[in-house]
Image (cartoon, rainbow, N blue to C red; front, side, top):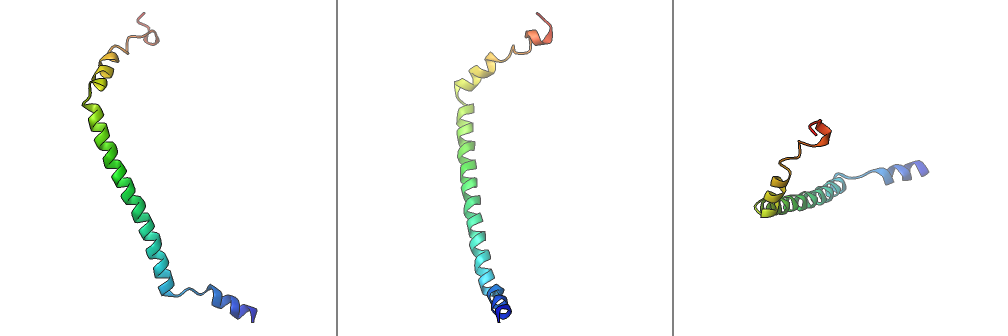
Length: 74
């Protein structure tokens, strides 16, 4: 009796399995959509930061970085 009860409890119908798979797929779809939206927001912010003067000043200040004491040209 315990064996038949246990075997009936483990059986999952195809309808139940389909519903579970649809739920899991929709959760992952939401996560993928959130990641895509964040990617576009970060890309837009990066483009805006690249156009500012702060990035150009940073590039100009690091042009002479190679001539330090680490390279032996004191």
